Figure 1 (cartoon, rainbow, N blue to C red):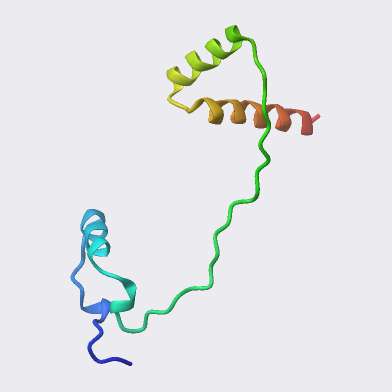
Figure 2: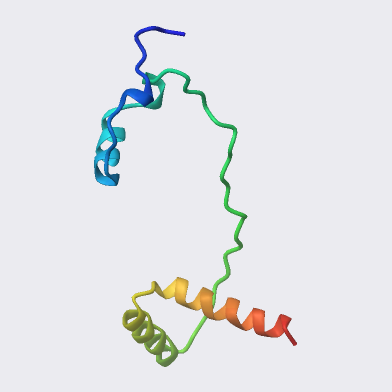
Length: 90
């Protein structure tokens, strides 16, 4: 092992904000015993669909989106998923 590498155990305790700042300025490779993990995070593939709606329906969706603070597409996706769950429970 390279003796110029630092030990994580030598670092003082830090708050979450301090840790975020620390890792903005440092790389894991600077520390002794670091190795790349084998975890690979992948989202399952999604399929894009297009949907034509009446302007009145879009206004209702936009109003609900603004009221709830949820993006239009996320709101519609949650409604569709909710309906699918209901259908599966029949």
